[in-house]
Image 1 (tube, one colour):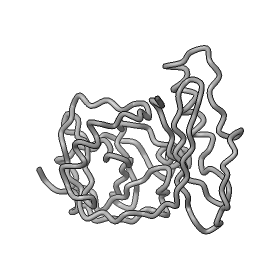
Image 2: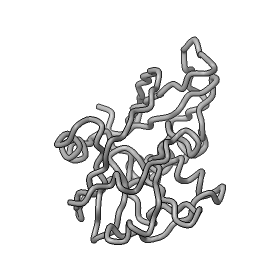
Image 3: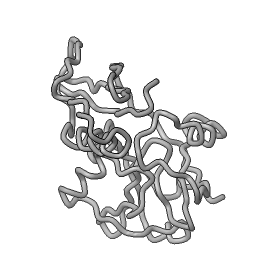
Image 4: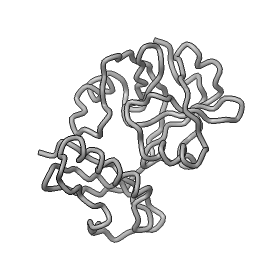
Length: 200
């Protein structure tokens, strides 16, 4: 019913990186619903008694004509390990509601173990995060992610991270990493040792 969605952070009554989320909706409409007016996030009333110190997860599921809003308090989950999985044909360039393949791969492991998609030897994303890696006190992110996330876009714009090809075999060059997405900013995300990324 709703083939696309956005996961957004609601903080202090405002959507973080709203313009980036709107741009992705616009791009999705341009690809799948050309000629139609995209939903405007700024016109949506998020009916919630907002706690200013709480981050809320807003899931906006949508199709051509309608949308559904779900708002829940967000809590960061701990990561005990990251398992690389080769999936050279996997395509998730739009924020599809159908995540069957990603969920199938993720569910092979405990809840606190993430998967890291590998394409042609290069790392891409985890099931729900973009990844950034630290080398010589500089942060890098894969130049070919599965999905160009809104937080990733923001950090690139702010020049806090740099795109480059990152090969699984070269992870030893990096000291640590963070997993980022709309709900996990650079500052919110825990810095994790590179050793948590397991070998196959």
